[in-house]
Amino acid sequence: MKITLVCLLNLSIALSAFKTCGNTPVKPATAPTKQTKETAVINDDKPAAGIRTGAEQTELYLPMLKGKRVGVVVNPTSIIGSQTSVDSLVALGVNIVKIFGPEHGFRGNASAGVKVDDDVDAKTGIKAVSLYGKHQKPTTADLADVDIMIFDIQDVGVRFYTYINTLQHVMEACAENGKELLILDRPNPNGFYIDGPILDPSLVSGIGLQPIPIVHGLTVGEYAQMLNGEGWMKNKVKCKINIIKVANYNHDMPYELPVKPSPNLNTQQSIMLYPTVCLFEGTFLSQGRGTMFPFTVLGAPALKGKYKFNFTPKSIKGMAETPLHMDQACYGIDLREYDIANIRKEKTLKLKWLIDLYKAYPNKGDFFNNKLSKEMVVFDKLAGVSSLKQQIIAGKSEKEIRASWEPGLSAYKEMRLKYLLYP
Image 1 (cartoon, rainbow, N blue to C red):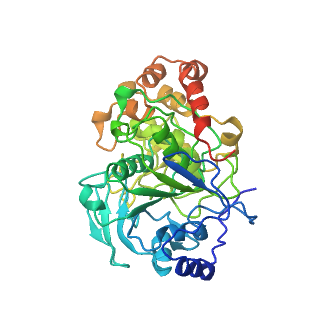
Image 2: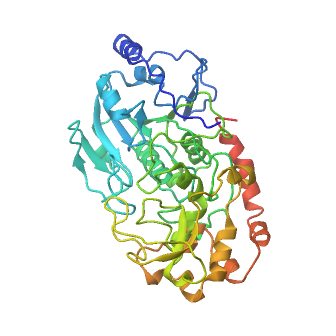
Image 3: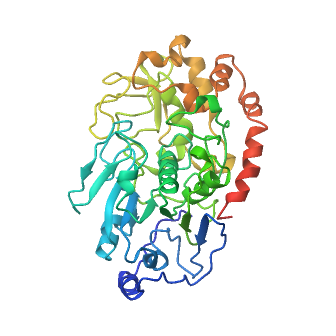
């Protein structure tokens, strides 16, 4: 059964708690389950009808914000019920002095890869600092008038999805400037499996910073603990973090996001297919950008005659202004009706699609040639290794390719256990 977000927020109770708590943070009803010098994890163990995200549990963290100047790292997925968490917290009297927006911007109206400028949020009048423009990391000046930072962004559990990079940059900035970070955790819709090669350090880039697999099986809160615990941040700094856990959640639960996490992940189907289909951004095939069903179709003009199904990418403002193969019929495969229950059952990336489409492509020299279009990404950076491309070219089987991911993948799975907050 699919679990959807249930809004259990009682604003009147939360506001009352916020107004009467004084300057001393109120102790949560339950003690942290896991605590280190840098990390406090706060539970909500009270019975509830369904999943409660960290953001919804205002009774646990409003006292921490009393009398403080608050900075928030948010985007359109940062919601409490039907409102953005910024709008909700401002209404509750929280003094938000600065908004930090990741890729796509705070309000989510910028296309993938498009740089975003600093601005003033029209609705609240709060300064909005872009972390996907002139700089990706908050500066000392950005944090000078901030007492505590909040990170509240929905991730989809994939290494090349850039929000976890934003998390790292924010954690480093907070550590370097003596600021505390409050993480409002959210479920990972792809958190039920771990798969893919471990990132080769020589291929570190803006779409892969750390030695984790393509599908990492962590929530944002768990990944933050890993960044601290493994000493992966610049100069091995450690960030003081408080994590508000998701209530009533475990990694194996199906979770359907209440809002799209970014412009081109606009359906649950696309979110579940994304870990595999995004690899095609490193090929001369369209992944459906420029359609209203991105990451659920694959094709190219050169595959005409090989496949009957076709679609034509168009310029769509805010999604894909100049998509690959714009205004050309692309022939390939339609995954819109693919049974995503297969992914839950098999818990693997679908390498077969990559292998089959490469075999069918007439001019194989073009398949991975990123010089053919600025819309293409370097495939090796997406994969995290240079071997996957060579294995596909060499005609290796899926079984042979998977074998090459060991022992790294098994070692990662073992290491991951240290940082889990949920079963």
